[in-house]
Length: 495
Ligand SMILES: Cc1cc2nc3c(=O)[nH]c(=O)nc-3n(C[C@H](O)[C@H](O)[C@H](O)COP(=O)(O)OP(=O)(O)OC[C@H]3O[C@@H](n4cnc5c(N)ncnc54)[C@H](O)[C@@H]3O)c2cc1C
Image (tube, rainbow, N blue to C red; front, side, top):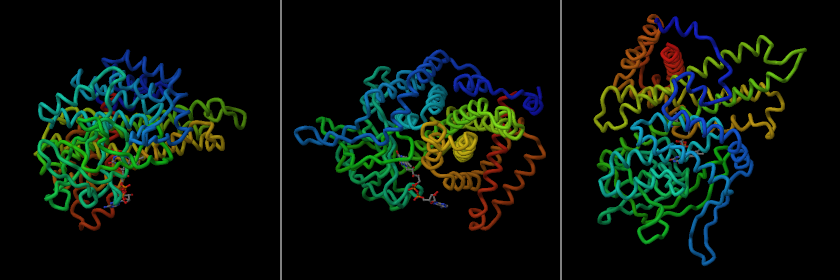
C-alpha cells in the first residue's frame, strides 16, 4: 500500500487519548510487555496520580543532612507514598527489561506511560538507564560485576543512577565550564568539584563529567566517571549542599552536589570522554522526547474531556467548529510527534552499542534525536499552553491539573539541552557528517518527493551560508526539517 495514501485515509481517533498504553499500541503495535504496561497504568489511574499530585503540591522535599550524632546522612525526605510510586516503575521493568529483552523499547514505553501521569518521575528512570548503559558498555568486568546487578534488581532494593555534568557556569558549553578535577589514585580516581544541577540527588551511582588534571581545558579534556554514593567503608562519597525549588518535576530531587576527593572509576578511554558524555545525553534526549509526547497527550486528553462538558453558546465548546478543528490538528500533530520520538528510540536501539568512530547509521540517529528533542519539547510546551487556554480561567488554577502540564513541559524544553543546543548540534552533524542526506534517504519511502527535494535543496543552500548566518538563520530551517520528518514518520506508522 502507498503509505502517503494510507495516512490521508487513516481516520482520526480521539478515544485512545485518555490511555497512554492504548495510544502507544494504536500507533506502534502491541508490545511484548503489554500486560505489565496495563497493570502499571491501572495503578497510576487508581492510586499513583493522587500521590503524584500531592508530591507536586508539597513542592521541594526536605533534605535531612545530619543524623542525631551529627554525622552527614543527606537523606531526602519525601513521604513514604513517593517511594512506593517511584519503585513501581523499577519493578515494572523500566531498567531490567532493557537487559532482559535486549531492547531499549520497553524502557522508553514505560517512560512514556510515566510521563502521562508525572513527567518528573520519568527523570529517575531515565538517568538510571543512562547510568546502566555506559556501565554495561564501557565498564570492565569487575566494575560491572560490582555495580550492574543492583541497578537491575526487580525488588525494592534496586539502586538508582544519575547523570551529573552541569556546573555553575553553565550546561550548554561543558567543554569550558566543567571545573571538576579528577586525580588518579591507584585503582580509582578522586574527583573534586561541584555539580550545580544534579537530578536524582541521593542516587546510589552517578555518571559524572570531570577533567583529569593534565587534560586540555576544552571539550576534549573531559572524561566520564562512575561515582558511587558510598565509599567501600560506608561513608558518604558525595554530599548534597541543597535541593532546588523548581517550578515542576518535583518528583525528582534536583540538588547541588559537592564532590571532595570522591572515589570514582573511569569509564572508557579518558581521551574519548566527550563521546561517552554525549552518548549518555543521547539516552536522556530520547527519553525527553518520549516524555514530551506523553505529557502532551495528557494535556490534550484533559482539554478534550473538559471541552466536552463545558457549555458555551448552547453546546459543549468541543462541538464549536473552531475548537473542534484545533483539537483535530493538534491530535494529528501528537501522532506525528510520537512517530518522530519513536524513530529516535528505534535508531538508538540499533546503534547504542557502537563506539567511536561511529557509523553513518549513528550519525542519522544523532540528527533524528536532535530533531525529536527539539520538536517534541516545543510541541509539549505549546500544547500545555493551548490546553490551559481551553480550560479558560479555570486552567490557571492549581486545583485543575492542566497548569501543571504547562509547568512540566517548560522544564522538558530546557534540560538535556535547550532548543538552541539541539539546533546547533543538529546543524553540526549535517555539516560534518552530511546527516541530512542520510535523513532524506531514510524518509524517502514516506515523504512526498517534491517536498523532500525542495527541503533538501534548502538545507544545502543553508550549509553554504557564512558561519555567522548559518547559525543565526538555523531555527526556521530546523523547524521545517523536524516537521517534515515527523509527518513522514507518521505516514510510516500509519502504513
Ligand atoms: C530541573 C533541572 C534539572 C536538571 N538536572 C540536571 C542533571 O541531572 N544533570 C545535569 O548535568 N544537568 C542538569 N540540568 C541542567 C541542564 O542540562 C541545563 O540547564 C541545560 O543544559 C542548559 O544549561 P544552562 O541552564 O546552564 O544554560 P546556559 O548554558 O547558561 O545557557 C543559557 C542560554 O543560552 C543559550 N545558549 C548557550 N549557548 C548558545 C549558543 N551557542 N547559541 C545560542 N544560544 C546559546 C542556551 O540555549 C540558554 O538558552 C538540569 C536543569 C534543570 C532545569
